[in-house]
Amino acid sequence: MRLGFLGCGTIAAAVVRALAGQGHQITVSERSTQVSSALAEEFGDVTVASNQSVLAQSDIVFLGLIADSAPDILTELQFRREHRVISFMPDLTLKRVTALVTPAQAKTIMLPFPSIAQGGSPILAMGEDHLLRALFEPRDQVFLLEAQAELNAYLAAQAVLSPVALMVAEAGQWLGAHIADTDRGKAFLRQLVSGCLADMKAEDLVQSLNTPGGYNQRLRQHLEADGMVASLKEGLTQLKNN
Image (cartoon, rainbow, N blue to C red; front, top):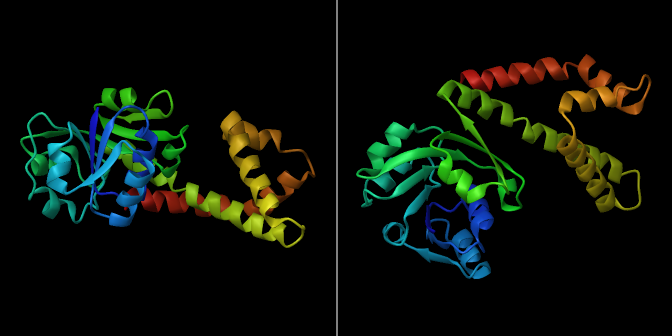
C-alpha cells in the first residue's frame, strides 16, 4: 500500500516502524525532521517529503499532528476524494477532521502506543476498523470502540501505564542500591511484570500472589493502606470527566 504520514512524532514513528519492511511504500512528512530523516535512513521503503508531496504519493494518510495546530496545517493542503484518512487525534471528532480534509473523508480514529513498533500492542480505534485490521493484525490487536464516552474511559484507564512504569522504575532504582548489577536487576523487574501480566488476568495475578504473609501481599496491603487504590480511582475519574 502507499502510506503517508503527516506529522512524524514519537507515536507516528512507532507506527512507521511497525509497517516498514512489509512491502508498503511509506512517505513521511518533513515535520520533526530529525525523526523522519532517521526513519528514512533506517528503512529503505521510507522516504521524506513535504506535506503536499506526502499526499501526492499516498492513498492512505495517517494524521499524526497536534490537535491544536492541525486545522492550520490541514486546511492549506489539497486532499483527494479517494484518500483514506486515519487520525491519531482523539481530541478531534471524525466529523471535524473530515471537514479539514475535504473532499476526502476521515473514517477512523486510531490510538496506537509506542510498543506498536515491536508488535504485540493494543490499538484503540473508533469508526471503520477493517483497514486497521488488514494493516496491523494479527501482529497487534485492534480494540474497536463504539462511542466517544467509551473512548474517554479507555483514554483515562490507559494512563495507568505511566504510574506502573514509574513503580517499576523506582523499584529498579531501589533494587540497584542493594545488588551488584543494577541493569540486570532492572531487566529482571521489567520481564517479571510484563511477562506475568501478558499471561494472566490482573485480578487472577493479584489472587495468585496473595499468599498470607508473603512479600507481594504485604507490599500490596501497605500501599492500599496508604491510599493507593482510592487515589488511583479518583485520578481516573478526574481524567475521564475532564
